[in-house]
Image 1 (spheres, rainbow, N blue to C red):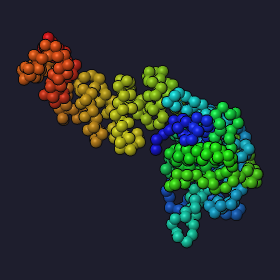
Image 2 (cartoon, helix red, strand yellow; image 1 turned 30 degrees about the vertical axis):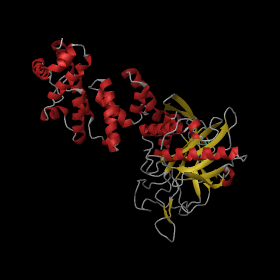
Image 3 (cartoon, rainbow, N blue to C red; image 1 turned 60 degrees about the vertical axis):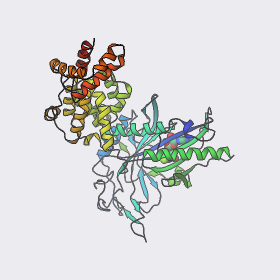
Image 4 (cartoon, rainbow, N blue to C red; image 1 turned 90 degrees about the vertical axis):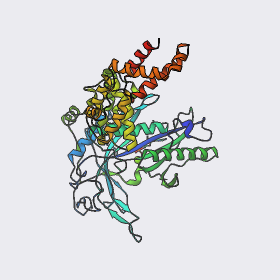
Length: 489
Ligand code: ADP
Ligand code: MG
């Protein structure tokens, strides 16, 4: 799908009159070996119902015991979102019935979340934009209903039941598909730097409820929103928003009005459909869970975590721009992923920064893209790429030959020096040797030499090309230029 830029492109009819307003409730699975209130493992992909304790299955009389590690993860994430950490928070029961929710309620935080207001900086092509965070609260995940295994019945897998989620609620500050894309990517990046969520959208570790409304441009009040539940990829979020915004505009233009409702996105038909009219908080009969005391954390608890927060993408970006003189664009793409930024820093330890930046954001990213690999699976080690760059820098090989060596390295992570020797790719920089080649080219092209001398300057490129050809691309182009100029005077 094309990633669209502005509301103008997003809305098809009367596009210049309307604006889209978007707010996201992101559910991020806490990176933790065990669940929020039990010691069952959380590993993805296990056999159904093999990671279920009596607490997760809601056996009568079982009591939840809070997992301190999950609390730390939530607080760390709050710090990464520049947010207020609440020293006292309360776990509530949110009551509803569902086959995969054996408790009959979800333990969540309602009025008193563990993390309050914060902000996230979006890196957009047009510059930076700050998006407000309303809150972050902890809650348990539900189990999973499986409808397509048994034709007669629905099966329930409780492995996910009780897994800790952080719900991160944004303010309604997003205005375009690009901003939604940048927002999700930034949240993911921050949490991966912190090690608080793996951000794996295929495995459902990061999914979002998408709130969409439209309003006439220039209006102060927001329009009525619809909430699209549980969308699990950026692409689907964008498709759902696009569909939903147009549906709302069409509705308003026909004289109707938008009802506040909960909708689902049908990925096959590319449309949103009504699920239910929006429930109000009181429908859930929230009340503090009597099995859990209010959660109180100390300043020391918070400060100890603060001390161990790693350098996050915004700071790193600033450092890369100041220290290495990168452009904001280059810095953005190099810091977006924690491992990529480490790879970059490893390469430039011993190599030219400008050249390294170009090779990493160019050839290396191209290779990863083509092979659909993460940087952690990169076939070329930082050490060997750094060596390759040094060989270009000191003139041992030309940029063109370097591309060839790079290709060979992408098949086998070898020291480029060895490759150059084995394939005798070394650049020819001996003036005497080059002179011989050049004399030969001149001798074989006497007619062209005459034309050149009578004013056809453009032929110079032809001679350079011929010399490169007879040297199998190995002649040092700079030297060839110099010598040729002299000889053709
Ligand atoms: P609820 O539990 O009712 O879904 P939350 O406070 O959890 O309420 O989340 C509301 C979400 O909807 C927030 O992300 C907020 O930014 C967004 N939102 C609120 N009003 C609008 C609006 N008019 N248009 C789009 N999004 C909105
Ligand atoms: Mg909600």
